[in-house]
Every structure is written in C-alpha cells, then in structure tokens.
Length: 178
Image (cartoon, rainbow, N blue to C red; front, side):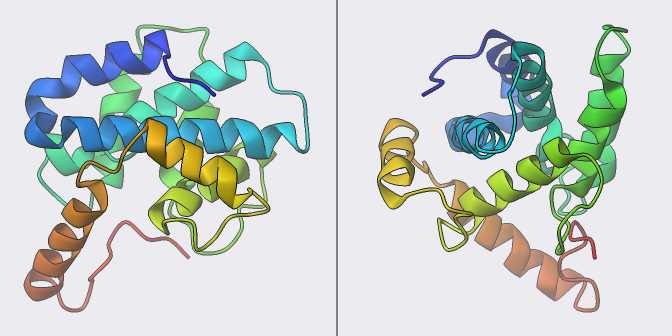
C-alpha cells in the first residue's frame, strides 16, 4: 500500500491553503485512488515508478478546480493548474496526465491509453464507495478506507452537487463526460 508519495504530497501541500478544511478528505481520496489505480493497472501490465508518479500528479490536480475556482465545473481549471505544473517539468508525459484529468469522469470506458482507463476506473471505485470495484476485493477496499478515512469528502461532493443542481438544473453534473 502506498501511504506516502513525495510528489503528491508536495503538490497537495502547495494547494492546502486553497483546499482549506477539505484538505484531509481530498488528500485521502487521492491516496485511495492512487492505490486502486496501481492495483488495477498491475492486473494487466507492468507499472513503472514514472507511471505511478504521473498518476499521482494527475490525482493531485484531478478535482482541484473545486477549490481553486470554486466550481463543480472543475475539469478546465484543474487542467489549467496541472498545465502550469507540467510546464516546469518537460520530461513529464503531459498528454497522459491531461487525459487522466480530462477523462476521469467519462461515463463509458475510455478506449485510448489503458492507463487513462485504469485511472477512470480507480476514481469511480472511490467515488462510488465501492459499488463499482472492477474486481478489487472488498478487504483491500476496507484497508484503504481504514488507512485513508473519508474525512467528509463524499459529504462535500453531495453538498456541492445539490447546490449546483439548484443553480444549474439543466447541467447538474458539468464534470461528467459521455
């Protein structure tokens, strides 16, 4: 189980003032998803440390627009923040990182790079509280939830979604993609 990741922690700590009281919930969500991503990917392929690092970078930014721009339509601002970060590190696979962020709420399977699909599935496992598991066993999921408690993350998502529904009834989930 990955309990620490230097790059993920560094990025999240940088944004902690913006994330505020939701910091622990978001950080724990990122760690749960990172572990699920690695588990799912390792079932089908060899996963390098560089690929784990790039998934960690994508995770740090994937929902960040919720706090940087105070919006539920957070994919564009999340990508903007990730682009600024990636500009500092030309060796990163920017295309992979951006695809992971941009496609992580795609309703149907992503048919391009398998790593993007594993990322999408991993986020869905955590978002759905394990309703969707993609063969991840319940015991592993329970261990992750014990190591990285929810800390109000799903409650936050419910509140934001409810507020957005009343503000934008014809676009209640702007971050979802078909």
